[in-house]
Length: 259
Image (cartoon, rainbow, N blue to C red):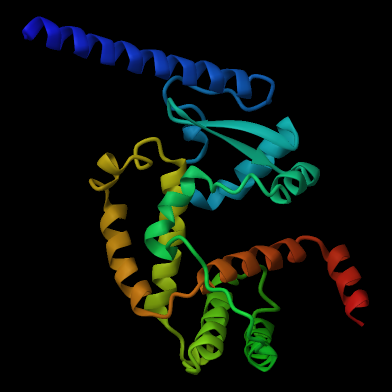
């Protein structure tokens, strides 16, 4: 019996090694023609992402140095593609077969779940009212060199979601919600850090970090509030405003079109 068990175990190990070798070969062949920054053994490009605040600057440098499609490696196994080529993005985003989300999306699932709120209702008045409040808040920041608009947009979208889907006016933009905003910022930071960390990508190591316990506390606060997709909307709106702020020519074109 011992000999049979050893043979079976040996075959299992052999098949696993064969499968892993095939996946490694297939991955190398796929990424071979894609340019990217030099890597170091085991860590890959992880040393370039020691701070989440420098993430966009690092991505911008990669795009300038290596083009619109850049190969990245985080740790010994995980590879990713950084894309700034809008034609490539249009091809991917309009493809009806490429529906599977990135593996990194699993870091967001404890927060946002697997779906977003959808509906046919129209709440233009709510959008306009909450939007005017947001504009008023941002007008008070005009003279500053820079401003983090995400907390403002987060509270605005929270107001919109609560009033349009639940019929409840919480007036978050005026009353403020420091615990909620802090929890949103903590989760955004943790998701980015996990996606860029060699060790935190894996749950076995992640539960040993401070971020794990920070996430548990943040999720208790976030899940206690209305969680119907406003976080995703806030992130998309914040990035849109960020892009517009960096391209005044597009702002002028949008204003003329609106008129």
